[in-house]
Length: 466
Image (cartoon, rainbow, N blue to C red; front, side, top):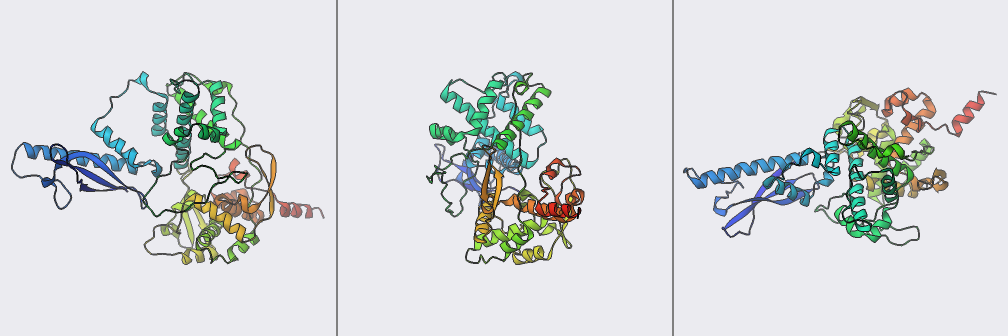
């Protein structure tokens, strides 16, 4: 929950008044300081950081009561903005100062026919029921569309604006090309990415952490903030989300134009699910990583993750309250709106031992989690140090061609979920029983991607013929 503290500014205006400033507590790591736009005489600022109201009736008392009321209304608005934001990365100092500005000078409401393309997107996000993860992914798409609009203005027409009228199948093709290779756009038009960055991370006042240098295939250092190359599946997924928005806009009377009618979105293709065996998991767990404590911590979280099989978004939200008896219970964030089913997974002895190892009174989370990106980097490093480097065949996300890589290069948080499902399915071979632990509903097409019939299962089936 958001929390706000006040303090009086040091400077004064021409009337001899000082501005009331706000300290906004967004989260444990994010704290912002912004001006309120409300100014008072310093002698009317009390020791309890509040406006002192004189008891004598008069014009000054009425003015101060009005300012106190406006400060309360502004505080409520700012805290509501923070509490309702599913993605706290959008809460920046600049963003909140914009909220303050609109509070004091609200813009006139546009007429219905004056709604811009991005206005309709805002309505869609405000009224359409999306899970937190899907909302986050859609906002990534929105930032891409903003950048595409600026790119078109820089390359072709300064007056170009995305609209339902200008949206054609040909323009969709240009958007698709743009999504595939934003790196070249970044290099030729870097100012676009200053306005709408590729990543929406918030800079917070925490100790600086040296991040590894990002290199290209030739070993050259890439500029900070450069977009990553997207694969065919990623672009197809983004365009599918875009199409869902356009169809919603048609259904809700915002347009009659459907540019996707004559545009084909690429098929999303998944390769064989890759996971580690129980023996490999044990080898990873038993590897001595005490020389690198950070890798050891993330390795242990990964091992625990392999024993409960949830999505990483659910793992990061878990607290000690999720432990009920000898099991862990949670409701999947991805499906809680449509199918809020409680998933109960019994805890193995190793999982319980890992919880006890990192148990810390006063810490809300179940483990000392970092960011998902940090988690993924350390998982790869742990695999490498444990010597888990067997060669696997995976499809190249850009070309769909088969490539061979050591498993340590493709290890990630989602491999824990695949490991949980794959190893249990090898023993049980009942998708509905495994789905009761993984959260997949009966007949789920997504679950089929995890059900890899590997060589051991094939040998067992051939054995039936002997």
